Length: 493
Ligand code: SF4
Image (cartoon, rainbow, N blue to C red):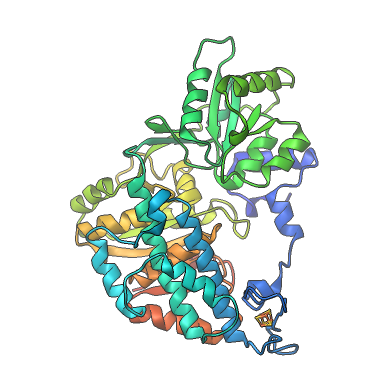
């Protein structure tokens, strides 16, 4: 516990961590520590990713053991295929945001992004992008057939396509506008019954739950999100915490019931079982009354618990779900640079450290900042998005993230003002595909967690060269970089 500050920068989270330890609970940080060192072959991309049952073959990164797989595959081919495998998963995740006939469509971009995409595709083998790319990639990953250059090219094409799929998914979505988002532990203050939500239950069901919860009752019921931006009516469910802190909030004793929708944090069911907190899958419950009645029953059968944070610990700001708000900002500040920081919490870094430290320093340097994902919630919790600031950090929709800012800059003809895009943490493969796509479009991109590319210098060089030929940069590290390293990367001319 003496190293608690390397787990999270939030003092309330640190208190909750101590409390969890007293309860004998092992949360994400403890699991991370007990897993070290994680699979060294996978971490450097030298565990064969092909769909082949003659393996699994692994190549010794230090050159002392096997230097080829059973079929003769060498390290460059294995690492390049690993990158393609991850990109393919990323594209598939983005496809999941589409529905019906759109799954068969050619992928297209609105003006002015299509000009950037056309230029990028000239550097990536030409032709338009369609969902054929997915089938082609799966075919390339059956057995080793193509050289690393071809696999890297295909990974980058999938990255660009992933951006298009996210854009199409967004266009199909609702007209929620730019809703307000509240965040902070203060949302858990008081005696209301609290239902925590993880993942994305259907909006229809949530609306029913909200309506049912707002009916007159002796004790009111409050809904809080455990790290996801969840639309509810014209707004968002308030976020009690970032996604990395979800287990802490459940361990606090303030959650009477957990509602788990698609994409829910997989660590929560076991913790709920251990703490006897009812967990209901949104797909399994038909009526809002049933859910509310379970929450009331759970609340009345357990002691209130001692966690009662200051209700003032809530910050609020608008989430930009469309490019319009950022366009206004760029118009008013034509000479200012814009830095983008976003991504998920990762136990490789103290939660909140990179986003708060780097965003604060950039704002201090006169750079505009926008963020998405957990990084954006940390900026919000840290007061960096407060409207009374002269230049508050702007918060972006977590599905579209940096793409929103890129669209705004392209519309305003200000792409040259992009200071850089930093992924502070990666969770899903989609995040990696997005990073590859943005770098392929000519952006300066940095990833603050080590990628499984360190098993092949050739692959790293080929990837960097291909991206550079399109005017982009993809920086990454063989270690979790500290805030100063990332700040220097942003400010490097
Ligand atoms: S493709 Fe080659 S290296 Fe990979 S598992 Fe099969 S035999 Fe091994």
